[in-house]
Image (cartoon, rainbow, N blue to C red):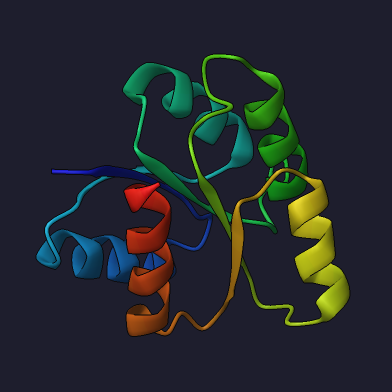
Length: 121
């Protein structure tokens, strides 16, 4: 069962998305801020990370950069999640090391396609 780390500060979003992913057969671990996400990424070694970009403590942009700079976590695919749908946000996510980008509110079918594609690599 693939393990996904969901880094999301909004409790309602975190609860809803983690339950939906678990129903689709994923094991889900959650973090509520970027610092906790970095720690869990090292400890849990997830197969994929869903990273909210607007996080407390360490934002998702910086957390993604740190994940990709660390040899222990650089190979873990990261999907940026943000309410901002501008092309500049997509470019910024890729520049931070994210492997893909998705907008909020999350459309589960679209997100699952991105997850499946990255896990198949």
